Image 1 (cartoon, rainbow, N blue to C red):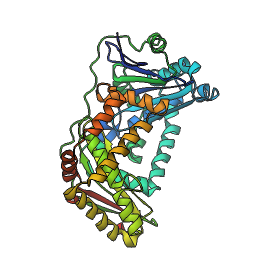
Image 2 (cartoon, helix red, strand yellow):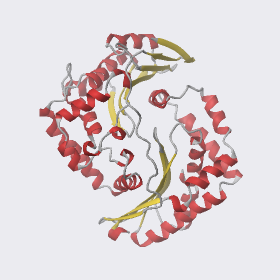
Image 3 (cartoon, helix red, strand yellow):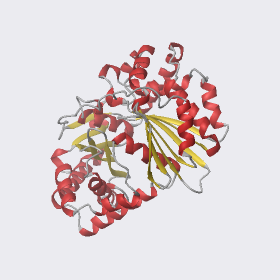
Image 4 (tube, rainbow, N blue to C red):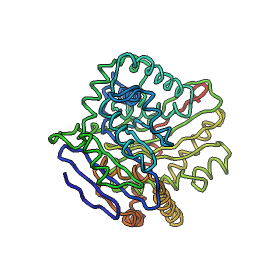
Length: 419
């Protein structure tokens, strides 16, 4: 194994089998955040198995070789700690936040969950029903459902358009052998990243994980990243009828992947366009026209692509007016870019978000994991801020012109009579 010091209190160990451990010691903190990320999630699924990664994430909590479901729930909770997990497009994560003295226990429990789940047929039926209720919850929450429909419309032939939860049909058809197969092919040690931040001693944690066999075994070739999405469905308009009090509308387009150097320019544009009360969309759509309570822009970066978009919730009778006004703002940004004052405000806003986002052990842990998951070299905070400062007016104008063009936006409208 190779251990290198990346910065003050920040270390990385890389094992021949592909497993990576990163830690950051934070002075004055009496807690620790620890997580294990598996490079296997919804983007790696076949359409008939949609939702298997998310169901697997649920099922590992039903029991392991060493612990019952109740023991998993109690062991950290009774000590004031917490245990959580989530499934995204590109990875599945299992995390604990505990007192520093309980870090070895957290490492043991997370290892149990990731490497030793029972995945019994007898646990599948009740847990599948839990996931089906989660799917039903999205169906009953239109401001969540409209995002699912938009991804499906934008990426009709790629797993980025699949529901992470799956559908009632696909989840209903999943079996215990499907879960075992997903676990065996995705949850091997070389496909995992482990990160911790807080009052953490790197060598002590490395030894604890080594005792669990995390760094054993020969080099293992990791699965390929998600397939290139090709050209998504741009400029499509989809209307879905639901008996709702509001019309829920998402505008959006595909963009570049996380590793693209233009991502800071995109983040600045999103902040200026719809990132807060001072943004163009908030001032125009809510303050001036009074068409919506909620209107905002967002962006997401994946390993193979990305997404940028806008959400608005408005009255069915004003849905057309809101749509036209938002498309006009898209056009204004695409053709005119940002003013010098807007650029500096967006730059300061992004730098503040980056700095404020590193105020907790959990956020520091997530930053470390992202480095390994995205294959990025470590850069100190000052270097990141310098990169944001280096975003040029020309780059902002080019990104705005390409990705905010009104004709590029795929629009999904969900409401009464497809309003």
